[in-house]
Image (tube, rainbow, N blue to C red; front, side, top):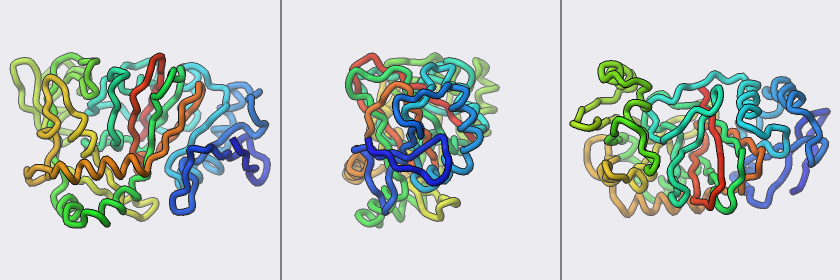
Length: 334
């Protein structure tokens, strides 16, 4: 790891990892380590105080430029430490309503990341891109590093849009015109064997169908009840958005994830996502998009205590399969 000294007195300093890549001249992701150098000797309280005092001056400019910031070598070691760290950043929590992944609350505003089996990879997606209310920022935290694999690859959304528009301009034009419709069939309870196994009770945080319908309506989602669950239909919803902060178009969708990964006993991934006019997506284009995502991504192996801050307006993420143990936690912010 190479250390780059930041100007002035700071608790944080930038570092370079071999997995980083330069995208349009910017290191992706940005990496921050303790200015004292590893191993970190600071207390958790010192780290939290530094987050509060330097968030606006140090961390957020990097997040704006790079789209993601990895904080490595600091004093957070447990879920409770991570909860305090997220709180120190001062971002408002976003309740996980309408998302597909099975998750469990651990402490405070901290949840498990997607609990699907370790042999399954989770395709690239923007967090909750299939609903209108999605997090602006998300945190991941490595409490237990994987025995092998289990990275959380990330990729810059505007660059994916750029490459897709160059290669498939007619497809992108239709996508921008019609958007996407996402369809998912939910049981009552969670199915931990499925990457989209969240049941309707936890999806809508209720066991009352009337309340579920009310919460779905607020998301713009239609519900069709079945004997043992419910079919959710979301959209048409935009698949390409405009990032007001960076003034560029972004590939803001879960198209590849839904088409290739929304598969379980209840769901056929080919039916899970269509153009907004109801016409099917071309399989060859989806396959090529998946290849572009993999080509452009960065995957940094997790170390215990790592905190990864992602701007959900800038970056898609995924999860590689892994050999247990692995415990990565998450927190979603408005």
